Amino acid sequence: MLEITLTLVFGMLCLAMALAFIRLVKGPMLPNRVVALELIASIVVGFIAAYSVLTGVDDFIDVAIVMALLAFLAAIGFARYLERGGPRDD
Amino acid sequence: MIDLAREVIASLLLFIGAALMLLAAVGAIRLPDLLTRMHATTKAGALGAALTIAGAAVHFADPGVTARAAAVIAFIFLTAPVAAHLIGRAGYFVGVPLWKGTIKDELKPHYDAGNHSLRSGLEERPSDDE
Image 1 (cartoon, helix red, strand yellow):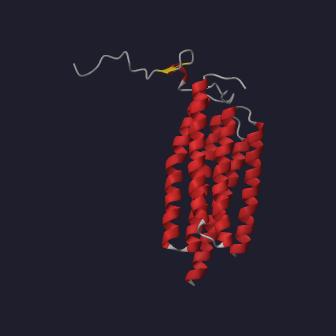
Image 2 (cartoon, chains in turn purple, cyan):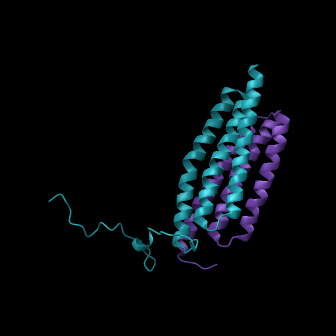
Image 3 (cartoon, one colour):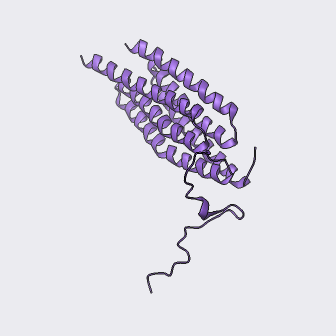
């Protein structure tokens, strides 16, 4: 049961990653790309959880902590960068 | 028996979490503007990540792993709203166009794009203390 579920989970996460990557490429403006990056970080956290279940190595949960922290800092940095720049048209 | 129940619960949590993240990605593709996309990705994405981590915690059934998983979930639930608020605010201020079907923009009468200032609308009201 767990094997079938893990196959389905990895398939769905791959599809979600592909869709988020399409939004990252299409934009159309920088804030949309930041939203896509944050979604990709969430998906990577899900990947790490599923992978630690697949391999049985529980230390990968620590990687998820670091990934969540990095995504948060990246979002804060992008938001500050955007707001400093003032109105833009790209 | 316990092992079977654990396996079923872990599978369900992993599956629901991955399905929610897929829904978030579909929302990011299909919805028309920045704020509606954030509405899809922030909530469904955060809940999906939290559920997959919870599924891993149930699978390992170890106090140390559960504590670390709880830390990840708490961190995600604390930071996701803050990050979404900041990106939405920055997106509004840099002039990301709203969807043409938007019927109400409550910030517009309070925000002056020229000098980047916000008003609450209560500044001119006489104070009640005196």
